[in-house]
Length: 102
Image (cartoon, rainbow, N blue to C red; front, top):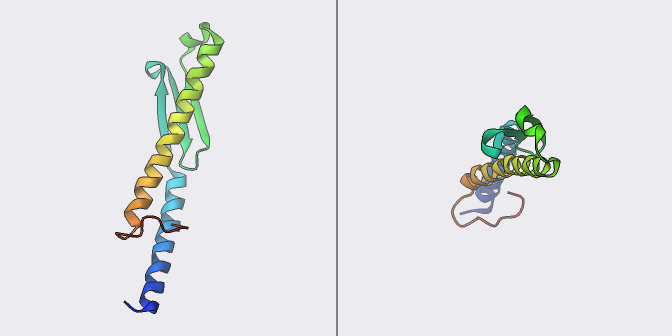
């Protein structure tokens, strides 16, 4: 394979990866805690978007509620990271899995 062809393929791959990262950042990921009584939504960039709490939980222990909220938010963010890794992994040609910048 000649060097020019490899460079062109690398540029195409980089453009596809940049487009995919933009698309992933716009996605929203939802996670739940306490059997669905707490719902957190985060973007693919890991930014929290919304949080819903069942009013019945507000009567419970504040420390427990805080832990449940953190759990739901972390799970929503982790879902976005997992999805991004999976989607970006699809772009990599076989054998180039550890290429920096992709």
